[in-house]
Structures are given as structure tokens and as C-alpha cells.
Image 1 (cartoon, one colour):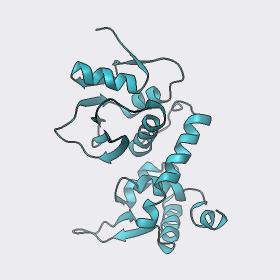
Image 2 (cartoon, helix red, strand yellow; image 1 turned 180 degrees about the vertical axis):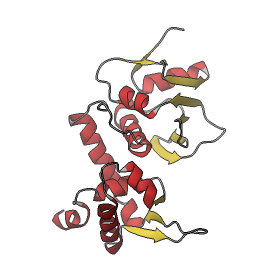
Image 3 (spheres, rainbow, N blue to C red; image 1 turned 45 degrees about the vertical axis):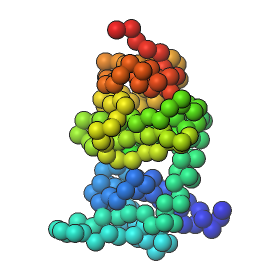
Length: 208
């Protein structure tokens, strides 16, 4: 454990790994998602993670932008990121603070972790897509007893969630009763799919 922490235990290192779990990112993407990090500090962390074999550079197919992605060793840290996310949800949960930026990757990782730990098995497979303004879609699937998360969407969704990052973060971090749908959370799908979704999040259905 001590040797592992020498590599990923410094501030920002695991957050860089977290933001690369769903796929390659550009330097500018990472600066934006890691709101308080400086460009100098991010460059230093990326170099350290590259040297440790956790992150690698992906040469641009066109233009000058370099993309960063996780190696197999980096991807092996996904359970660590999810375990820390679960610990935070269980012991340090709070809604977004005033003015605090909410970013989609950690929010959706938290959504997947919540479902895995609190939902229990569904009676059938499910494909749910979240759409946020000014950001690409995210898809969570339940198949063969397992939850998976990926960027992107498709045409085979059982249900589509139209909301904002802030509204979904408030919903997910709520300690009291949750209600669906809401003014800022719209659900598009058959009644059975909507009911299954609400039950997965232990939410009450709002009367039409």
C-alpha cells in the first residue's frame, strides 16, 4: 500500500485517473474538470503518472493536441476510484456548495456507484441515458447483474434523463426523500421504465 501511494497518493493523482477512466482526454479537458489545479501542477502530475506507467500520451491524429489515456495499470485503479467514491457518499455526502463547479465524469461515476451499492438487482436489463446541456450523453447499463458506465448514447435506451449537472448532483446527494420527475429532471420513456428508474433511486413518483 505504501509503495502504491508513492505513485498515486499525491494530491490530484487519483483525480486525474478518475477523469480518464471513461476515455482519453486532452490537457485542456483535464484543466477544466480539475477546477482548482494549475497548468504547472497538472503537467507535473501527468509526467509522474506517465513515468509510473499509469498514463500514456496518445499522439494526435490531426492537429497539435495531445490526448492522455490510462494504461492497463491505470485502468486497474478504477475499483479504487469507485471505492473512494462510495466512501465519500457514505461518510462525506453533501450537495454542491454555492458556486461549486459540477463535472459530468465524477457525477456519473457516483451515479453508477450508487446504483451498484444501493439499488439491488433489477428484474430485467436496462439502458438509461443522461443528457446534460453543453456536454455529451452518458449511458448506464444493467446487464447480467452488473452496472456499466460509458460516454455516449444510442437509440436503444429504455429511458432518457434530461437534466443539468447541478440538478442531478442535488438529487443524488439528497439525504431526504427523492421525487421524480421534477422541474429540472425530465424522464422520457415508457411508464414501466420510468417506474423502474424511480425505484432504483428509491424515489417517489410525482403525480402527473
